[in-house]
Structures are given as C-alpha cells and as structure tokens.
Image (cartoon, rainbow, N blue to C red; front, side, top):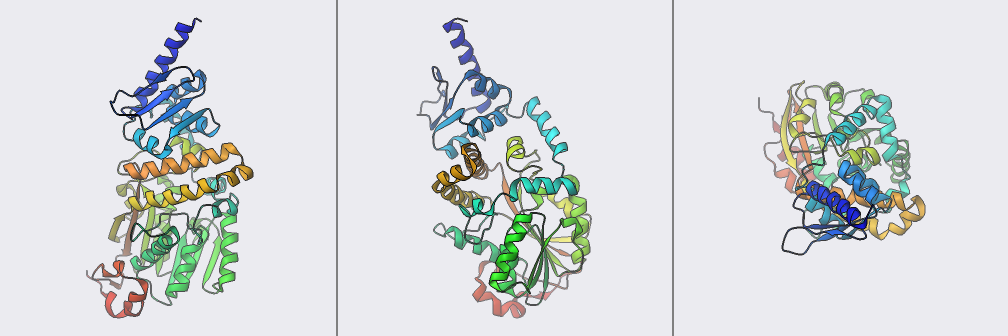
Amino acid sequence: MTLNNASWIDRSLLKAVRRAVGTAPISLALPHVEDRPSTTSSPIGTIRIADRATLTGLVMNPEVVFGDAYSDGRIEVDGDLVRVLESIFPSSRVVRNWRWRMMSKWLAWAQANSRYGSSRNVHHHYDLPTEFYRLWLDELMVYTCAYFPNQDTSLEEAQKAKLDLVCRKLWLRPGETVVEAGCGWGALAMYMAEHYGVKVKAFNISHEQIRVAREVAEQKGLSSMVEFVEDDYRNITGRYDVFVSVGMLEHVGREHYPELSRVIQRTIGDQGRGLLHFIGRCRSLPFSVWIRKRIFPGAYAPTLRESMEVLEPAPFYVLDVEDLRPHYAKTIEHWLSRFDRAYDTVVDRHGTNFARMWRLYLAGSIAAFRVGTLQLFQVVFTGAHCPSVPSTRSRLYSSISQNQDKLDDELWTPAMS
C-alpha cells in the first residue's frame, strides 16, 4: 500500500469518527495525520489515537473501543478530559449503532439482576478492597451524591448535609424503625441512629461493605441501634415505620421493579414513609455499554416515569420529587480530584489499566451529569393511610439543631385525605 493510499484511508477513518463526535470542538489525531474541527475557535483538546486498528475500532463501536483503548493507553487525551467528554456527549449522533445495540442486549441478558446475578454484579464493583475507595471518598465513606448548601462546602460537610437532608425528608422521630435496602458502608444507617434516635436494619449483598459497616458501628457504639444484614433486598421481612434506598434502584433492573415494590409494601404497608434516591434519565435509554461491561454490571438508570413502576402497583402517595443533578456533578468533581492525587497509589496497587479505567469512569460521570445525560432523583412517598404528613417543606431547609426539638410540635399535622 502506498503512503498516499494509507494517508487517504486514515483521513477517511478520522472523518468517520468525526461524524460520530458531531460538532465537538476537538481534534482527532493519529501519529502522522490530524483532523481538526471545522469551528474557527481553537480546539479544547485532542484525542490521540495510537494506530489504525484502534481508529478502525472507534468507527465500528465508538463508546466501547474508546473506553478500552483509553484504559490501556492506545488513546490519550490532551487537555481537560472532562471538558472533552462534556463536548462529545451532547453532539454525538451515531454511537448507538447496531453493534452497540447488540452488545447492550447481550449484556442485559448476561448481567440480569436475578438473585444470583445481583450478587455477581455487586461483587464486581463493591467488593473491591475498601482501601481503594478510602483513597478518594469522604471520611464517612459515602459513595452517593452529596448535597452542597453552598459552593464552598467541603465534600465531608456536603455528605453529612445529604445524610441529614434524607433524614429530614423522611421526618424521622426517635424510637421509630427504619429498613434500608442497599446500605453501602453503612454511613446513612449509622447517621440516622446517632442523630435521630431510630433503630435501623440495613441490607446489602456486598460482603466487604457489610464487614466494614459492622466494624465501624461497633467502634461507634451503635451496634444496639443498627443491624447490618448481608442479604438480598428481596429477602427483607418484618414491619417498619420507614423504608429508604439510596443508590440501589439503578442496580435493581427494571424487570425487577415489581419485586422491589412488593418488598416496600410488606415492610411499611399503607402507613409508612419512604424515600428512593437514584441515578435517572430524562428519557428511556440503556445504560452505557462500556460502564456496564467494565464498571457497573447490570446498571440501569430509569426515567422518573419508569421509577414510578415501583410505587404505582400499591397506593403510595408521592409527596416530594427533587433532582440533585448539579450536586452529583460537583460530588464527582471532588472524587476525581482526590483520585488524581492518589493516582500513583492506585497504579501501584491495581495497575495502570485499572487506574486509567476508573479515571475515565469518574470523568465521564462528571460530564454526563453536567450536560444532563444523567439525573439524580430523590422521591419521597407515603402509604395511602400514613397517619400524618408535614404540612410544609420548611423542615428541608433548616438545620438539624433547629429542627430536632420541634419535630413533634411543628412538622407533624393530621394527614389530608
């Protein structure tokens, strides 16, 4: 093959990738040829592709090949990785081609969230060594969206603010019982017990997270108030005043929403309260194939309408819906900053491929929440005959110290029929 023919092939392949990324103001480059954006302004970054084989893969299956090639160093990004991804996400038009759809359907079958499948999927992600997560999470080990009362709030303060916001939305009272489905390392369960005087039974199928949660509860003297159970949410039994799930619905799978619905019905009946906190979407789409393949097997982010399938079979009343999307973008910005500071340690412990894969996952998540590809919903609901509901939303915007002594007097009013 002549040099001119090789150059023509490479330029043609680069133009095909350009069509995939749309109008994103980025350059695409092989070692000997570059395709610059048509905009008059300077590119915000350059995607450097190591060889023609990788470039051909990008044409065939852009998302998956980009993720794998970035992880193993066949693709490098000059410039701010988050900004580059942020520019690509809204303008990309042909990423979900027939190959992507076929792989998506195969993953949906192979990673189905059955009882066995859920255990396997959770083990892949959450049973990584806790010390890995300690490198970049906050001191309480909260691996879900934080809540930033202002721009200067630290990650530690924002995660505590989120935990307290959840408690206020549930208007917890001392002596009540709470069941939590999917408890992570136990931060919310222990916070509810310590600050609101409730008893919590928290379920999780991650052996590593349950082990750590039990150790921390013992150290804090909360073992009599919080019980951590290593079991599937489908096996939850008993009656409680409150049901809460933070960051689990996206791992349930839409086909299993009826099972979760039955769990909620039998645990809080028609008189309890509940909260679902989950990653969602504005329109129904499968989750990222690359993330399902490499990071979060079995993940599905529902639309708000789809999430109501959990509540609609039973007469639950939705009292409050909030989208915390900007807060999750800011949360992951903190995570990525800490991850980058610990990058060499991650490489030493887990290898370069792993470190680059996780860095791409965090950067891509920031971009997705910034541009609105992903949302973060909190939905508060009650049973049809919940004896009382708050008459205003004032409890959501006051601190715990201001509210705690006034819960019974000010927040609780007879339920309206």
